[in-house]
Length: 261
Image 1: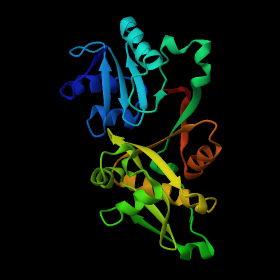
Image 2 (image 1 turned 135 degrees about the vertical axis):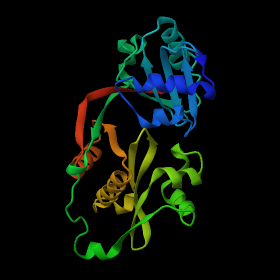
Image 3 (image 1 turned 30 degrees about the vertical axis):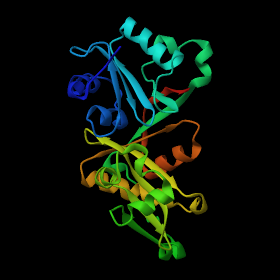
Image 4 (image 1 turned 45 degrees about the vertical axis):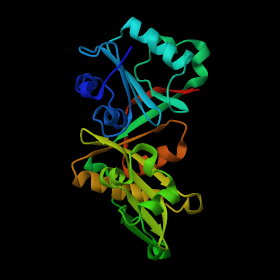
C-alpha cells in the first residue's frame, strides 16, 4: 500500500471515474480541492485505491488486489493510523476483511438520492405570518464568521472560509434576521454536489430546511450542477425531507462502516 503524492492523483481520479459509485467528497480529495490522503497498490499504474477525506469519509475502489487489501486491513482495523477520530467508509464495494460477523456492529446503511429539474418541488413554502419573518441570503466575507459561529460547518470540509464561500454555494435562511438554517455543498466535483443541510434546534419543525434545500437546488440547476443527497436509511427526517423536495432513490441502499480509533 503506497501513499500517493498529489502530482499522481490524476491516475487515481481516472480509476475513480470508472467506478460505479461517485461521491463528491472523495473526488474533491483527488482533485486537490479538499484535504485528505490517497493510497494505492501502485503509484504508476494503480489498480485499487483507498481515498480518505480529512473529515474521515473514505472509499475503496478499483480491482481487488489481495496484498493491498491486507495492508489496508492493518491500517484501518489494527494500527488505526487514520488521522480523524473515525473513518466513515462508503462501502458499495465491500472488502472481504470487513465481511466478518465481528464487524457487524460497525455497519449501517445509506441511501443515495438524485433529482432532475422536473422533479423539484415548486410549491410556495413560505406561509402566512411565517413569510414575513423569513429571508434568504448567501454566505460572503461579511457574514462567514457569523455562519461559522452559528453552524460550525465552514471548516468541516472546506480548507478555509474563502473556499467555502466560493465552492459551497451556501443558502442561508434567516428567521427575523438571524441565521436559522443552511444548505450547502459539502463538496462539488464533476458537476455533482454533495448536499448538507442543517437547521438550528430552536428553529426546527418550521420547514426552514426545505426552504434552504429548494433554493440551493435551484442554484445548482442554474450552474449545471447535479445535486446529490445521501443519508442513513434510519434517518427518517432526512429521508422525508429529500423526498418532499423531489429527490428519488438511486439504486438500493449500500453498506456504510464507521470505524473508530
